[in-house]
Every structure is written in C-alpha cells, then in structure tokens.
Image (cartoon, rainbow, N blue to C red; front, side, top):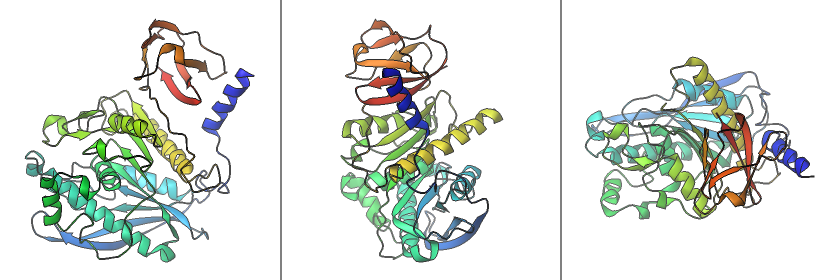
Amino acid sequence: MRILSILIIILQCYILSAQCDNRYNTAIFPNIDTASYEFGQNTTYSGAIQKLSLDLYTPNGDTFKNRPCVVFCFGGAFVEGTRKSLELVYFARNFAQRGFVCASIDYRLDNAVNLAANGENGSVIRAVQDAKAAIRYLKSKVADFGIDSNMIFIGGTSAGGITALTMGYSQFDEFKDSVKTIINSLGGWEGTTNNLSQSSKVKGLFNFAGAVLDTNHILLNDLPVYLNHANGDATVPFRSGYPLNGQSKTFVYGSFNIAQRMISKGNYYVLDSFKSTDHPAFASADLLTALANLNFTSDNLRKFLYKAMKCDQGTNSLASLPAPNFYFENPVRHILNLPEGIYASDIEMFNLLGKKVKLKNENSKRIDISCEPRGIYLIKYKELVQKIVLD
C-alpha cells in the first residue's frame, strides 16, 4: 500500500489531467502569429520621449477567445536588452503553441553610471510603470486579442524578473519615504506611460534569476510565483546581496529568500535551483547544458501556470493549492541539510520505484546520503512531497 501511494504521488508530479481540454499542456498549434503594438510612451532618464511596444504571439487557427496571457520582460541590468531576447522568443512561441497568448514587452532603460551610484531605484520604477501600462493595454484589448483579463501572468529574466516581482509584490505604501519621493517625481506607482483605466493586477509571477527589493512586501495569500535561479549566481544573488558582483548599491533578495518568505506565509510557489554560477541558469557556456536547462525551465514554468490556473482541478481558485512549507536545495551531493524546524525523524525518503531509503543520520539536522545511488528521489514530510536530485 505504501509503494502504491508513493507511485501515485510520482504520477501526479508528471501527469496533469485534461480539465482544460489538453490546452496549455500540449503543443497543439504548430503555427504562431506575431504582431507588434504600441502600448504607450514616456520620458527616459535623459528626458527623451520613448515609444513603448510589445510583440504579441498567438496560436494560428485557435478559435478560443478567453485565453490566459503570459507577459515576458527582458533582462540586461536595466541598461540594455530587448523584447526580442532569444530566450523570451523561445518561451513565447513554445507557450503560444500550447494555446497561450504571449507578450514580450519594452520598458525604459537607464545608464550604467546610475547602477553603481544607487540610482537603480529609478530604473526599477520606470520599468514597473511601463510593465503596468502594458498590462492595462492588454486588458483593454481582451476582445481583440482573445485574452482572459483575470488570467494574466508576468515575469522575466534578471532585470525583467526584478521588474515583474516588484510590480507584483510591492505596493506604494510599503516603500520608505525616500523611495516614495522618487516614485512621485516619476509619475506615481502606476505611472503615465498610458492613461488607460484598467487594473494592472495580475494572476501570478515568474522569475528567471531576478530578485525583490524587500521580501517583507510578500504578504499572506499573495501572488503565486515560479522561481528559477542558479545557486552560485553573483550577478543577481540566489539568496541576498548586492547585484553585479557587488557593483550595484541596492541590496536585493533572490529566489531562495523569496521562497523562504513564501513558505512563512503559506503561499504557493515553485523553486528550481541549479548548481552553477550561470546567470540565468539556462545561460551555460556549454550548449547542451544550456538547452537542457532552457527546456527544463520552459516545461516547469508551463506546469506551474497549468496548476496556478487550476486546469488540473477545474477551478480558478488558488485557495486549495498546497503550499510547500519546506525546501531542500537541489541538486544534493553528500549531505542533506534539513530546513529550520524539520528533523531527520520527521521525514521519509523514497526512490522512484517507491522503495523507502534507509537514512543514515549524521545528526538531527544533517543526513549523510553520500552512499545512495545518484538519481531522483522524493522527500516526504507530513502530507507534502518534494523531488530532489542526487548528483
């Protein structure tokens, strides 16, 4: 019976039911339509007026008119980058083939001098204002674009991830007075990139090697998030610190700290960590590793969105989603370090055949797994299960 129950858990990790008629889970639309739209304009850091556009990716031949929309923000330290960034084009096309509408958006950039002089708050604020304007624009075009305005997700790479997470989690009243002053001087938290009246609120977030300015901005029942980060990243720290190898003067909190905050608030999240220094994790110099991590990221983001939309349970509520209240860094090599409040006697470990692994306890907070065969295992704590990789 125990083996059967574990096998059922394993199958649930890999097989999603077809409550959405297999949409969003399978590439059912081979051809993609792309078009560009201007969603607003605003003043750059240098005082110039910049027009801002988005590229829209839609499944050719799709007759469904109430589709979720995934919005992508490019990376580049707020000083460079483009909405046509290759990984975003890959993600957008991949998801559009599965029935999503995808948008890759512009936002205003800054100059490198500001990043080293604690001026990036202005950069983040401008980017957030533009992202909010893009969301409002998409909601104003739901009939034209076939979008469900209640099912819009936003995320991005590096600076794009910071933009999306800040937009989703930070409210004006939560900032200190000095930052509020900057926000007001730049046109307010919603900004003036366009004057559309639609809400800029979204359904969920995702992040490839990004961060937040303050994890305290993440509250109980806050937005679900997919996090993807190399644990040795020094460009944007996996845990916390100063970005750009310490050159930036703004302290940020990376994916690990975000996950810990989500745990403490009981919010739904997924964290994929990678044992490398790559930024982002799918930017390895080794082409095969880069492609493998890119595909892995795309697949797990899709699974996150599928679950966040409740396609596997047939409802749009997130209230019943189980929130993991523990996290083990992945992959693991020799020692399994246990999270705060969890002890060796509290957990069970199984291989993919459902066989329970006899754990060798070094002490109550560390478990020696160096003798176990390398591969994929499941850690069970109470009613929750997490997959770990022994490498």
